[in-house]
Structure formats: structure tokens, C-alpha cells
Amino acid sequence: MPNPLRFALLTASRNRAVRKVVEHAPVSRNVVRRFVAGTAVDDAVRVAAELVAGGLAVSLDHLGEDTTEVGHAESTTKAYVTLLRRLAEGDLTPAAEVSVKLSAVGQALDESMALDNARAICTAAAAANTTVTLDMEDHTTTDSTLSVLRELRRDFPWVGAVLQAYLRRTEADCRDLATEGSRVRLCKGAYREPESVAFQSRSDVDKSYIRCLKALLRGPGYPMIATHDPRLVDIATTLVKRTGRAKGSYEFQMLYGIRPNEQMRLAADGETMRVYVPYGDEWYGYLMRRLAERPANVTFFLRSLATKG
Image (cartoon, rainbow, N blue to C red; front, top):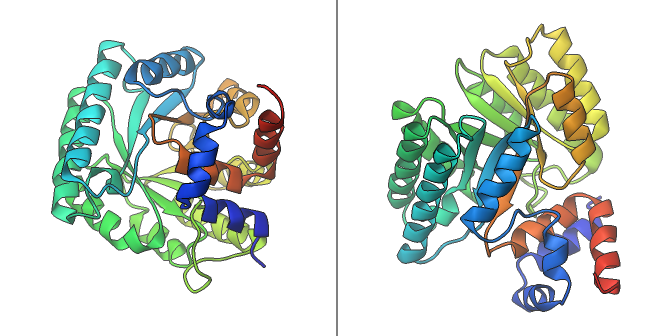
């Protein structure tokens, strides 16, 4: 059975009226600071520097999606190019890379436009001595995103992919992408999807995650294990040992502001621990999906709204 709270929050992530209320609540921006670095590139670079100094790797996401204007897609692309230059100037690469949603750089307008913009970002990343990971969005964009990934990897074989375990197709996609040099981030998934394409229960999603992770670990690629679930972290650690994986041939990933002590523990154990750090004005949809993922996040948010900060 689908989780009704998760369903409601994912519905709210697309609701303009709810968005207006949340964005204008007096303490909302204080709450958002737990999960979002800030609105400007200076904020992103500052947080990245703090995390890298603490022994963590970073993937920065300039928030924004579902772009329907050419100018917006171009400005997002320029924002990434500027960010990458700033990261290089701050000696934060290669520890800091970027994550890109293709819908933010024109995918809904024209796939070739999104490819060209993503290629410009990858060119800037190469100059900055770092990498790019293509974020995955709802299931209607999966084939298009994987198509762009294939084209980018012709010139930039290090471009990372994201696969979502709640989609029924993902185990097969993991087998296809578990190749030499292929960087694949495996996450559970955070969009509202129909039962026809996605597992609905937490148990089924977890089982799929484990099957997908096994497929990635058996291949010669570079798995990026993105989960905050303590049970899945323990299972992943066991599977890594069983497959004889050396540290540095895979990594763990978690979101900024979620389980920071666990992030530091993994890094202290010698694991590569990458923190996904979003920044920018378009934080509403991101926040709603984070609340949908974990009830503890909802409690934190509501408690903050009920007080004066």
C-alpha cells in the first residue's frame, strides 16, 4: 500500500497554492537551511569547502527543473559553468563535482538543446578537473536521460548516471550500465509514480534496491550507494565485502543535512562519502520530496513552523 503521507507531500510538491504558503511562511527559509546550502554560488562554494575540509566529497546541484523557457535553460547552464570555475579556483576539485537535472537545461523543450547545454557543463567540468552526474527525474524522462548520457559519454566517459530502485525497470538498467568506468548512483527514488512502473511499498522498494546494488557491485563500474537507511547501509557494507570491493572502487552518498554524524562515521572509516548539496532559489520541490522520503523530516519541519524558529 502506498504511504498516504508520502503521497500527499509529493502531490504538494506540484501544487502552486501550497508552494506559495510554504515559501512565504516566516520560518520556512530557516528550516530550508538544514537541507539547502543557500541561494547563491557563494553559499554553494562555502558549504562545499566546509565539507571537503571535513574529509567528505561533494556533489552540488543548482536547483531548478521543468524549464519551459530557453533563457532559463541557458542561465542554468551558465550558473553551472560559473560554479565549476569557482570550485576549481578554490582548489575544491576533484572532491567536489556537480549534479545536473536535464529538465533544468531544456530537456522538456528539446532533447538536443539539453544535450548541448549538458555538453557545455561537462566541458567546464573537464577544465575544472572534476565530473558531472546526470540526475534522474520522473519515469517519463528516463529513456531521454539515458539517451543523453550515452551521447555525453562518447566524449566524457566519466559522466555519472542515476538510477532509481523504485522503478520496475531499474534492475535491468543496472545490469546494462554496470560496465568498466561507468559511474552509477543508486537511490530509492523520490517522485510520485504509478504502480504500473514503480514499486509502491517500502519493502518492495528496499528489495529492489538490494537486487540493483548486487548487479552494480558485480560489474566493473563504480557504484555510488545513495541511501540514508541504516539497514541498507549495513547490507551494502556486507555486499561490498562479499564482492571483494576495495575502498575507492565505490562510494556512499547522502543528502546535505540528513544523518551528518553517519556521514562523518563512514568517512572516518575510510569510505568515500559524498554529500549531495543543493543550492538556489528553486528549493520548494526539492524540500517536499525530502519531507516525503522520511517522516522525521516532516516532524522537524512542522515543529519549526509551530515555533518562531
